[in-house]
Length: 128
Image (cartoon, rainbow, N blue to C red; front, side, top):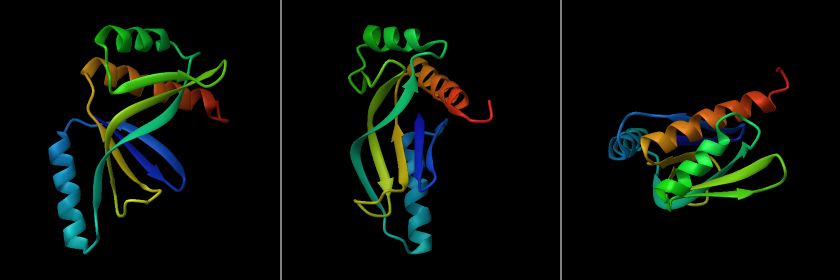
């Protein structure tokens, strides 16, 4: 499963091994214990990937071959594409800008998305 965490400082994507149900249940328990509200809803999330990182063509091919309806890849310009995934938004309120988005894809698709996102971050880093 992929977990995208949106904060005021940006987006962080990670691959997690727990099930969607377990992750959401843990978040519900945390909210209950802290006396917070929690909003969970089906949604879509999008992020940018560089087309110049090694392996991008393999992701495109994989999405086409698997006919993954939950993933769409749309060109933004000559260097980046927007990857949109279907999943669940978990946040304190329905209109929150910070929260957690989780999606379950095939292992191979998750692997490529995660590795390409990491490579895009390295490529965009001013320290590199």
